[in-house]
Length: 323
Ligand code: ASP
Image (tube, rainbow, N blue to C red; front, side, top):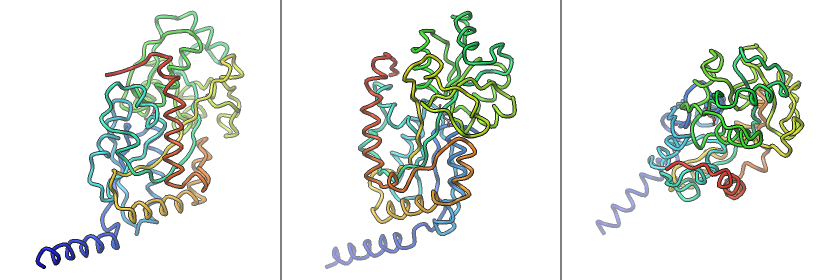
């Protein structure tokens, strides 16, 4: 009887906690440094998300390093109570092929909360690079083999994947300079400490428009309509046939987060992504908010699984691993 009462009391307690969720700030872990593209998406999203989470504060915690795997590992091990979630990109699907030992199981250690947006990438260069166009950049890279520095956010990051395929397509090896995110890498690119980088439009469109870095090409199969980026050719039309790297973001909670809380987070995400201001802001940065059909939790997990299967062989063929 005593035991039964104790079970009933705990159940009542956890049910009331569920009913009140969220009753304190919710933390979104961004697995990259502040000021970069993932961070920017998270901060914009956090503002609208808060409105649909009882106006609770949404805190952004940057846990950069190891191409996003450190931040993702932190969320995998966090309490599954809905107060710690992860916003991650394509690295969620590419890291398993890049690392021999992963600190978490991508499909087994998370609850999938829904996708956020699709973001193309761009090839950008330091402002002092003599090349002004993509064909001139290719010539410059060929003439400077062995001396080129390519910034990225570490093995497993989108900038790493894109840079890897870029080097492969050109058959030019570059020295990679890893950062905790492309936010700090962008600062060094603008300052001329590194030569080139492949990074999401959410981090590059304003810098290209303002002349702070040189924009050379987009990595998606079609040109973009965002004014700052419309003049950039695709890599495909620049002789790198079939080049197509597009980044997507999704939200995750630790495995075991109660179903009603997952559903609340998914519902809040759907409302946030329908916010006209958020949509407009994302569009101005070259990003496209996902349609409602891709917002289902099961659809999100299926998509990540398909991306793991798509990128695994490409990465293995490129022979890039870390322990
Ligand atoms: N753009 C970075 C990457 O290479 C990540 C970031 O700093 O948001 O994946």
